[in-house]
Length: 195
Ligand SMILES: [Zn+2]
View 1 (cartoon, helix red, strand yellow):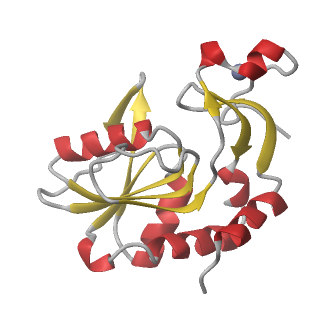
View 2: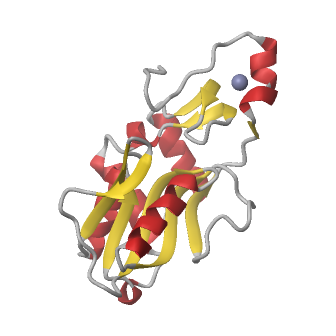
């Protein structure tokens, strides 16, 4: 069963995961809205529904393995891999640098699907793909649940698809109107309680 974008956004609203306020994104930019996918993915049925939607955008025959950049991509990436019955690995930052750890290996020429929860600049995904290539793998497609900057071209050098497009303005930290208003302290939703 396929969901449309409105149904997926409703899923976020129902989970209290469509947040309004003043947020510092992982890219360092600021924004007044935030989708907290972790709250949606608490319900494994939501994870299955979103993963099913993502899988409909890829040819499973082209994929040998699924990879995600930790932490954001872990839950949805695992569910995508489970439904596709493919091996699943993840990259993670250590002292700021994206790495492949935990004994994961990528056989030469392995074709990988890269799965992320929310994409803005795509920085984590690009770092993940660089690590995959260093280890002999070939990223063939990027899938993300939410694209916070739809229309931003040239973020990835492989095909890319998303389930939800949320066109929200983001601001450089030193040029953020919310900071200038000084009404709300900016918070990092990834690292603090926001509800
Ligand atoms: Zn700000």
